[in-house]
Picture 1 (cartoon, rainbow, N blue to C red):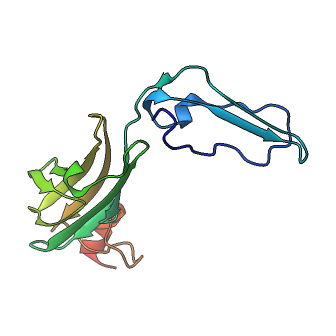
Picture 2: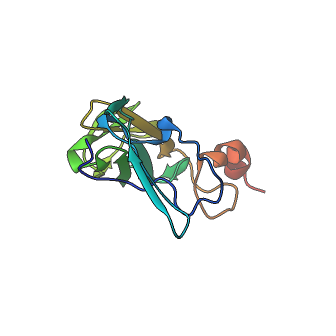
Length: 171
C-alpha cells in the first residue's frame, strides 16, 4: 500500500541474513520493503527504492459444521457454518460465501445457513470469494436419511457404511 502501513516479517534475528518468500506475503500492486537493524548500539534503516508488485492471493476457507462424513436422519435441518480469511482483505464478509450441494444444487449465501437436504449422499462445497476475484473452496461429504451409528463410536458417519450389513442383520 505504498508504505501507508507496515507489517513486521521477522524480529530478533540472530543470523546476518533472512530469506523472505514473496509467496507468503499478501498481494499488493504497490509493495515496499523496509529493513531496520540494530546491534543494540548502532541502528540502520533502508527502504526499497521503488514499489513492486506481489500477485494477489486467494482466500482460505474452511467448513466448521457439519462434520465431514456425518450421517443425518431424514428430514432434519442442517446448519452449515464456514469461515474464511484473505491475505489482502482479512476476514471474508458474509456475502463472500456460497454453498452448493452436488445433490441438491445451490444452498444459499452466507457464512452460516440452515438448510433442509434431500435424502441421499451429499458433497457440500463452500466457496469463498475475495475482492480481487480470487476464490477458494472446501468440501465435506454427508449422508441424509441413509443409516445410523453402526460401528458403535457414538457418531453416525460415512464409515458406518462399511459395517452397514452387520448393523441391519444384527448379532
